[in-house]
Length: 111
Image 1 (cartoon, rainbow, N blue to C red):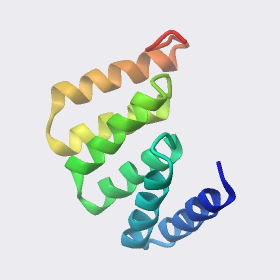
Image 2 (image 1 turned 90 degrees about the horizontal axis):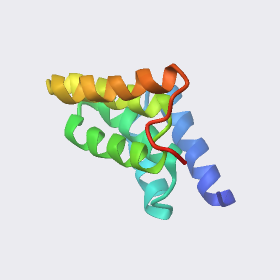
Image 3 (image 1 turned 120 degrees about the vertical axis):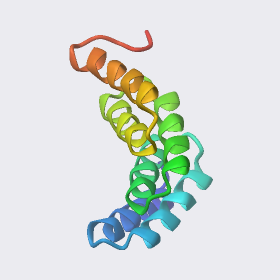
């Protein structure tokens, strides 16, 4: 990760920490625009969007995160929460199932 991307991500995290969600979202968007493969950026953007009520977009970010790192427990848990907020219980249960597999030491995708 380049210094500028790292700095931008840290700045976004700072805004998130003090409740400045719109500022954090804008900076997380810049992070993933700079590096479309930046897992932490997609995950953080999804979580921030969920907090702002932008659930559909949050789900898109969550899906990108689990695509980039399909064996990340936190990413699947977050995606499940996003689907619950959207009222999509079947998808929430499927994401939760993947999180459970990972929590038990399994893999969703063999590396």
